[in-house]
Length: 428
Ligand code: HOZ
Picture (cartoon, rainbow, N blue to C red):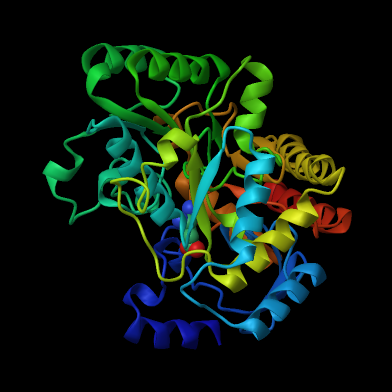
């Protein structure tokens, strides 16, 4: 059934998918067409059950079909799908986001991470009156033209880190530096500091697998941005409300006194699985947005009433005491179990996690940048991916993607995953 659906899909949808990484082109084989999902599992069109470690690429932090979220969505849907006029729930969601992330004074709700990143960039340029931006190799900030240069995720998967169709003049203002490379960072600010609108970074990169920005690197990003009047923009579409309730910035704030970004881009978890994202920051910057200021941004479905209900119900659940401690411990158990299984079989393996987000590499030590991630043995990853898939474990079908554990994953799910990995590692 998966095969015939894929053939049918390819006739009417480019590559048979509506987002490239789903096509399994990197790992080979037929994508699984999902029929339904519940908790930590989904079932494909052939009725096969999988332990789901992508969780819609991050949003499903509570697992699928959480009762409180379902109830909120059903109730909201009965009241109307979309109004194109403001609702109280938009205020409630904005308040909930701001309450959890201290660097935010105002947020604007939009419909996708791409839209949020693109709008944040325009706002940074409009607020500073400058054009140049810094981004890092392997960081993916959605598919807006100016950010689609040396990006991770699907672009890395298909070996085209810069997309066709992006005019060179559009990316001429985008400086691309190596992640965690202090020398390049210093040099870029020395040469271009006065022209820089912003530095945009995934603090925990989830689009070149899982790579953390080191604390000294992040500290220097903050200092240089402040010295040169550039805005530090955290892309927390993946890490936001996923690695901690206060997002990745709360982790850096514990290690760097007084640390906070100027702007934050959010998505995924704040929508709980519905199309919803946001960007926010200090009042002085956010008030440059229309209708108050000269930077234009808008959207028919922005702040959608069903999506905001879904996001709010999700944030309520993950704000409960102990939620992130339990999720983090479970995710760590998964990464430790996989590491042990590989090591016992004499296979190189390393992994890292924070909250409910994780990554692993079939190499000895954790990479610090995209170039090192690229040295991963692709065929070896693909063999691992397919062995796990056969065993009913669904990891991301590309080695450049992070993985996600939800509150619905049980110890039994983790144990079954580790056993499946162990069986593979002793075979190869
Ligand atoms: N850009 C996502 C991975 N980093 C993929 C989204 C999707 O295919 O749903």
